[in-house]
Amino acid sequence: MGMTYFRRYRMELNLRGFRAQWDREALEAAGYQFVGYDEGLIRDHAQAKYQSFRSEIDADVFPCLGRRDGCLRLMREITSRATFVPGSTWLLRYHDRPGGRGMPVGTIQGLEAEGWGVIQNIGVITEHRGRGLGRLLINRAATGFQAAGIEKMHLEVTTANTAAIRLYEQIGFQRAQVVYKACEVVG
Image 1 (cartoon, rainbow, N blue to C red):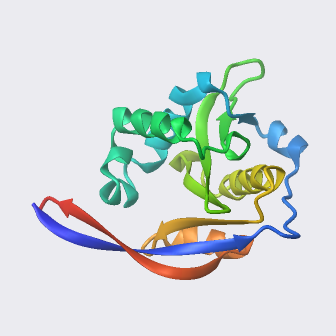
Image 2: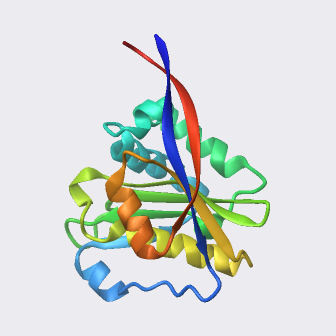
């Protein structure tokens, strides 16, 4: 085992004047459905989180993301915090046929810290990436923060995750700070 440091950006977005946009009808026509936070959906959020992160660099940075039980434990920990913002926590389901329950394909969770909306995790499973779903999840979370009276939000992203950084910058996030996360890695 050795210690390594992962370089991450703290990225910030001013929500004053921010207008989230999504075409609900087009989303539903493509088989997707947003589901607001409900305690009974924690396992679905954990499943989407696990499927999204298990093979990504973030599973190295945060090993719990590479394990089903770790993702479930993390979801329970996030939602039990006094600073949890249910209105900024969304599950995205995909229905391959009308009337079915749908499988969880995306998740985002929000917290409040010192007047900031904080995106805890955002994930879309590999097979559903490149369709603008990450942008829609962020828009939903931002709307939830605004409804809670929060005027700014931030998230952290590993600097090697260039696709995510590009998305966040397109939405309007600005790189505000470089932070380092220490991790023990094998080899």
